Length: 174
Image 1: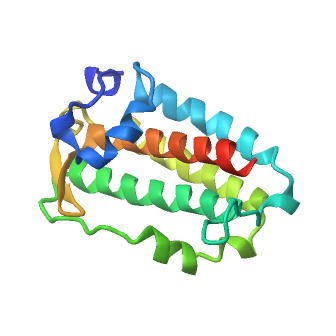
Image 2: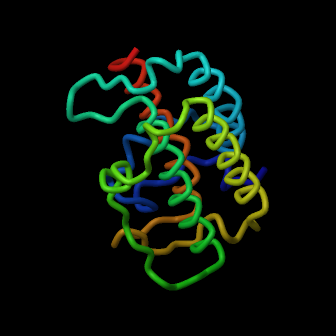
């Protein structure tokens, strides 16, 4: 545990769009929060009946399975950004079109159980990555999707992005 995992990123460490996600993460050690989510999220998603996995709260919105797949895909992208920036790679990283990705991910062809299992594997790898980063990597800054971001902010973004989508799931789908 370092000061970088305990301290919320400052607004100059990320694009303003991500402030909402970061605000959803409680103060304290972000790695402990990521671990807590790794246990709580599969329990929550696993309690959703498989038959409702295709439910959409509106015709143009993602299904529950697509939302789960989006959380997994996004975590992979944010984790790769953290790895690349953490390793001091100066190359700017591209953005991604989450709507296009969702259309081609075939999440609705999978079971919720399978998506939950994949989530657990991805989160395990994410936590392992952040735990292995040296202290000097956490404040390192890079460019992703044309915006400046630090490794520390990316850890908080991952946690907050998940919180956001679970809140949407609870409020609009279930």
